[in-house]
Length: 409
Ligand code: DI6
Ligand code: FE
Image (cartoon, rainbow, N blue to C red; front, side, top):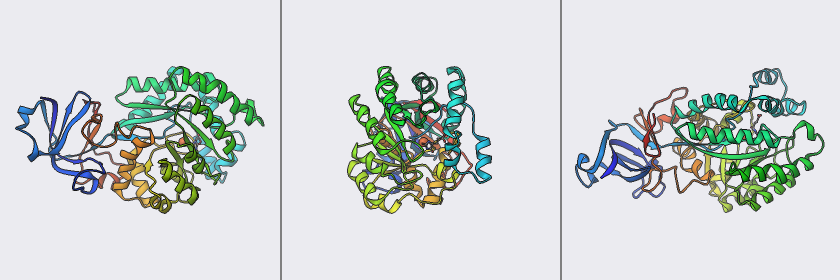
């Protein structure tokens, strides 16, 4: 007997290997069985090995709804103090994101607010943002540090991220982003700061088991490729996988560097060159596109979509939820924006927030498709076809969420 059998569902498995594959890996008139926290069976109703009541302790009727894998938001900065609404006004008056950063605003203004905040305050403000993501079917979320830029505050942020995962029905992956910006006390001493990150902050985060991955901002206004490389080498010594904020505002060959270190993902990528895209394909590094930041910074340079496709680079999408460049807490909106702005198909976009989002977190074998043996994370939707998830915006058709086998919404 299975624990739960969901009947009368249309299932977008998102499994690329689904036999006789339909778009979205779809199984119409299907059923999905859960045993413990795992998926035990997925298929057509007519192929069930018996009458539903004889197969499972609980039978739940999905009443013709669509079921997709639980959504994966693989790049967020959910934990921070304050907000940057005033900076938004300045940008609308003509100041650029880089100018504001160089004048000591930008990331550094959030660093000040985050250092000043108590752990409980950070937990509370991030909880509200997290609940907004979860209400749309997110079951896995990555959360970065990077607004502390000193050991104490970086660890405080990562502890908050871990506690969010304990207090909410979601799988949290943490990323240590100590190399996000140069703190004011290290002005003109970026190499010294990177030494501190490598020799004190990263070891402390690793020691407490707070860093599932290591990330950096490789950019003219942040850290050079050489400094990034030092950090990647330190991460390797701790056996922690890397990711990179790469080529967001200029092409420093960040994506190529990420590929060289077999990064899980390279993120943003508006200015990525073709050779780097090719290297990403070879290394299996996922391209994480962040349409919220593209839109909010009014970027006009598009990520090299053609090159990614040609070189077999998997594309994921995420909110980049943060106070400066993407103050958004809707992953479904990113689905729509990826289609309208980046010309992705609704199916590819959905893969970007399920299967490929999982891969970008090193969880490709664990979540992201509805396949027997994977964790039972899925979402029921009040839609008539899966493309509706990308087509509407500002609308939430989430009708139910299962996380690790439990109905949580
Ligand atoms: N790129 C981004 O878009 C975020 N971080 C980064 O490296 C923005 C962070 C911020 O402006 O607060
Ligand atoms: Fe980011």
